Amino acid sequence: MAPKYQDVTPKYPEVAYPAKTKDLKFYGLALIIAVFVVIGLTVFFGSWFTVNQTERGVLLRNGAFVAVVQPGLHFKAPWIEDVYKIDTTTKNFHWDNINSYSADQQPADLKVSVTLHVASDKIAEMYARFAGNVQSAVDRLILPHINQQVKVVFGQYTAAKAITNRGQLNADVVKALTDSLSYDPVFTIEGVQIENITFSPDYIRSVEQRMQAEVEVQKLQQNLAREKVQAEITVTQATAKANSVRAEAQAQADAIRLKGEAEAAAISARGKALNENPNVIQLTQAERWNGSLPQTMVPGSSVPFISVK
Image (tube, rainbow, N blue to C red; front, side):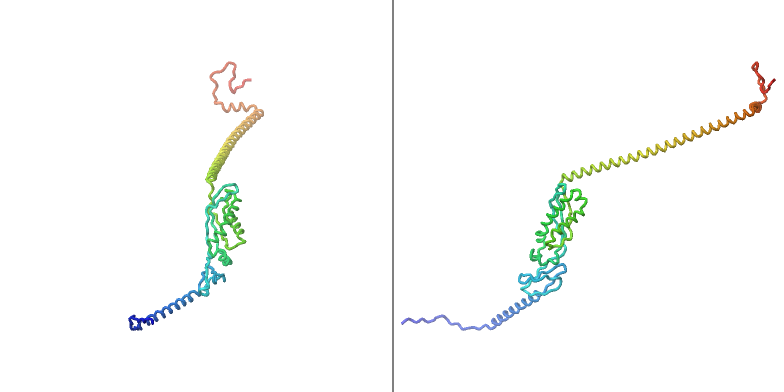
């Protein structure tokens, strides 16, 4: 027969803790209330949203596209629906050192800026293709066309024409870029600006030399024009002086001629008077005689005014 063992474990009396039990119930109830409050706040604040005027929203349900949301206040199902906002404001992107060649084979580095915004009717496509990232869309869609179209258009201009016709160059680049993106119009191109064109040092040096030569030519042309004017002034002065001398000589000649004609006319009149009246000479001598006879006389001469027959 097997031996029996006695349980020698000391027996303690059971003690009740009523205050502690009440605290545990209170904390549990408070925790449940807090959870419901958090859930309620989440439902309240997660069930509505706003879209600014400069944005468009993409409503997603469990990650799937539902609709494009316009600006304003909207509601959504919490936890299962989400909204991704895409900026539609105008933005400007810059690219430096786009290498290109002009029509006369001059290398140049172009600084180009593009002004654009996301097309409002392409919001869903923007999100589906580029996850709504504007910078990523520009790098993957715009940049390749910029590199290609700028080089193509710039290659149609000579270096000098590209500088003097910058406005037309910009217009041609805008048209080429818009046409190249017409099949995929995620963006609306507002403008393209070629902000700077940097040519090689050799070309810049040749331009400076050409400009100096043109300045020298202009200077020579100005000197020639000045000398021509001076020569014309000299000729005008000489002509005026010659005309003056000629006029003076003509006046003197006319005076001499008139004097000679007058003297000739006087002589002719005197001769005519003598022919008509031979005694005019004796009358003139008598009128001029002072009444005195000569003190000496040449033998054989006659006494003045006395005629002895």
